Length: 265
Length: 154
Ligand SMILES: Cc1cc2nc3c(=O)[nH]c(=O)nc-3n(C[C@H](O)[C@H](O)[C@H](O)COP(=O)(O)OP(=O)(O)OC[C@H]3O[C@@H](n4cnc5c(N)ncnc54)[C@H](O)[C@@H]3O)c2cc1C
Ligand code: FES
Ligand code: FES
Image 1 (cartoon, helix red, strand yellow):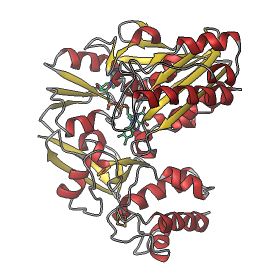
Image 2 (cartoon, chains in turn orange, purple):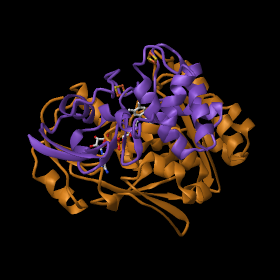
Image 3 (cartoon, rainbow over the protein chains, first blue to last red):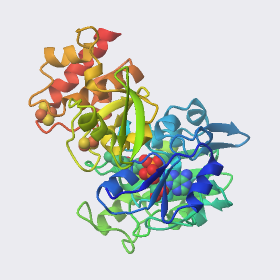
């Protein structure tokens, strides 16, 4: 790891100030992506601003027709929340399947979506549930937030505060996990709700998470596993790596989508 | 350098370290508690698992500074008054270790697991060991030991 200055602000305001006062700062939340990156010397921030212990970013509220989850909420907290299990069990199960127990004790919702790893799970839930991302500056719709592999609409000095997930009528997430890393080879989040029907695919796209509009159209006509089983996804724009080819991933999308619709009921 | 203070195995400790010091380095090199192991560079093996404020975490994937003020427990802190913890006893009884490299992390993960899920079955144990790799591939007896300990502690 290269050297850096370490800051531990006590409030969100202090965190904003610490970011503004540093040369090339980075936020540190759970560290489950950032620390391994620093250990490999793949990043060299001048300052780390640790928001991991800010309790005012760590909460789950069930209000009206939505869940609002603080950006600092750990994966394990989402997985164990009775409110999430009641209103959005697909989201609780998704969180419970991220990495392993130790990763879930540290990793946060905000860190996961800010990082926008193309194989991460939460981006699928955000896009698949028409989530609203609230930052220290503005509200960003999930459709606008994920802009490419490891890229988001966030500005350098912008901090995610919370994410609002409207309650779905039906939803499920199916992940075909890479057996070594547990990241998604392909993950498909399907939902039906006030926003209509959404099918979000993670793990497969070269530009990160995306919506499968052909599948959404098929499910509009007929909400059933068979409706998506007949939709073939083009391998263009999908990832090829040591774990699988674009063609293989395209096939997996159809299989996972079918299983997700089945599970959503 | 800056002073990082915490409680480790019930004792207050404090040391002047670089901000980039990992918690595992603080535990092993600064405090000399070498029961906690380092088995990888990629946060995947779990040999380094300790408890921070009662939760199992990978001490190689956390800065010492992040644990400022926290209660940390390492494998050395499990035995009470010379009496091994039930999970340690079960690992000995069921031959849950071969070379022993992964063992501290396995035991710390198991103690946390039994606390979170008192009703364990084999499938759950295997699923929950996702983040702990045994290079000797002795999983069978590790799972047996954890199930036995969980029965014993019920
Ligand atoms: C062994 C292992 C297995 C994993 N498996 C999976 C998996 O199966 N699925 C999956 O989805 N993920 C997986 N992860 C990643 C894990 O979910 C991380 O916790 C997550 O990606 C990052 O969250 P964090 O809180 O740890 O963020 P950090 O590592 O602290 O930060 C990540 C990035 O987000 C930025 N950031 C953090 N918080 C904010 C905020 N509030 N506002 C703006 N920017 C912010 C940071 O500056 C940094 O650039 C795994 C990680 C490990 C080590
Ligand atoms: S040494 Fe910490 S996970 Fe391998
Ligand atoms: S006993 Fe040798 S690594 Fe597990």
